[in-house]
Image (cartoon, rainbow, N blue to C red):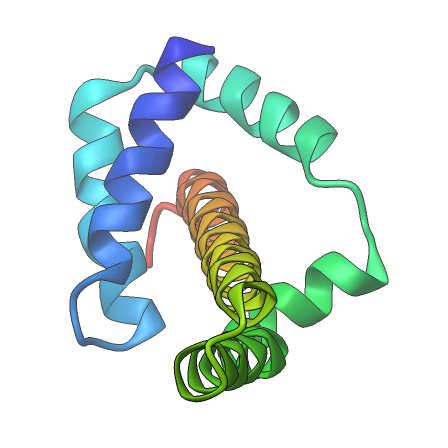
Length: 134
């Protein structure tokens, strides 16, 4: 499990860079090839598939995390505006709750994207092993 977490951190690091998915997979594939044996890669892939259950909400959050979090950022802004202008503590509480919800949704989407990138990379490695002439 620790190896999976390390690989997920590597995938998250690759997500921070502005490049195409193919380039991210290529760079991550090299890192995985140097640090993880083939048997461990297969074990990690099976663990990852067990973790990633197909879910409609998770898929939407993965693909559009900022869009899903946007209403909560709006609630946070509106709560802050009302809390300050009308001197209402409940508005400030809404601002805090909206900010926390938006942040957690975006973090969840980021982690889902990292898992998907890692899974695609492991599948790419297996495909390249099966087709060594590529």
